[in-house]
Length: 98
Image 1 (tube, rainbow, N blue to C red):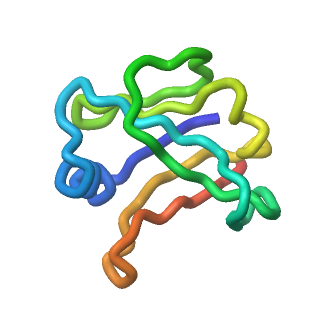
Image 2 (image 1 turned 180 degrees about the vertical axis):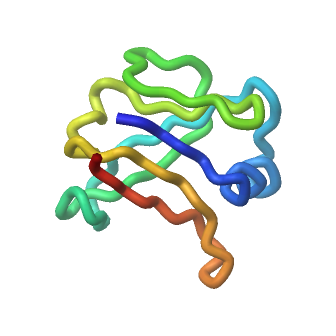
């Protein structure tokens, strides 16, 4: 699994969340939502300190974005691309499988 962050999404994290260099964002699964990869589950994120069980990470703009081992099941073998959708003014999660 890979994580990629678009430049537009990176700017969103900096402006809306106030993330700066050395910040950490954890992506995790949450019940009561929807996603194209898991029924009844959605992807969420939180500002976090240090991973407990780091499984996948990428660094963009000095910010570490990661997923813990306990949430790998959610992606069902898909990579995660995070983008920003200007029309709906929200992050957009795109799941791809090689």
